[in-house]
Image (cartoon, rainbow, N blue to C red):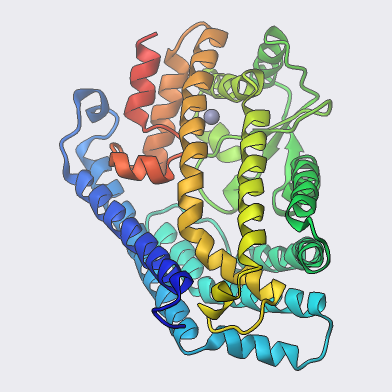
Length: 412
Ligand SMILES: [Zn+2]
């Protein structure tokens, strides 16, 4: 861990660079809260709403900042005091094989990260969200959600980690093998998640017969998008924020609408929002995103394969030798800044896709009006930032800001 090691300098600059970039972005974004709104947005966000959303966004960012600076300080403390090397030695002394040792190191670090993040999650859910009237999560739901998350991590995350460590420990073409494995796993998860994992957290009930259900089936038929089931999801058990829904893929398409969305939107608005989601499917956005994700994973695994063979990389973190499991953990630290760069492309593409799905929805229902009304309501109900700073949009926004979406829809 000396300044003569280029890995050490790159890692330190990367970690500190990300922190400062995020801080600057947040400050620029908060400053924009005071900027006068263009007339198109002024009617959506009257004075009273603007005061509420400024307070909500500022409170949320405060928690995020305190969390980030705490995590950064703990990471630096652990790193510079030789914590990574110490942990590796302790686990080595347990006398298991290299693969098991690696998985054990990964499990310890993930558990530590989860535990350290927990107080901030509690603060955010029961402090900020509750103070601004959004939170509906009870302590019981919060605890059971986290226990389920831990069980899933143990049942799915650890075996996946085991396979990846095994590849890099034993195979010559490990990056390619790991990529093929991770790609198959991702595809499997897109099928399993809506069927097995989401129902562990949300309750799905068939939608009652009525005009909305009829309108949804009529839309699906008109768009040649076969739907087998429309469900209502109990999002209201966690938050009062109305959320859109997701559609399963393949033959057993399931459309799910959050009960909170049903409560706050008209049938026309819901049908238009649904047409937007069907638009994502019809315009082939899902396979494009999956392909981009797999390409990003390929780049990441190739880089991982390279750093795992570089003793200098491990030395930068005070670890002797090249233990694979610890290498994965350390690569996670280094991947923070790289991930931001590779993420830019995915976010830009996602924002472009949102415009396409909006245009599709307006064509499908024969007017842009219901979607525009629905989007305005969602933004206002969520107390979203009315005009985020372009840097914040570039780094974090998967959806274009409301003003841009409305302008594009009005221009049609
Ligand atoms: Zn969308």
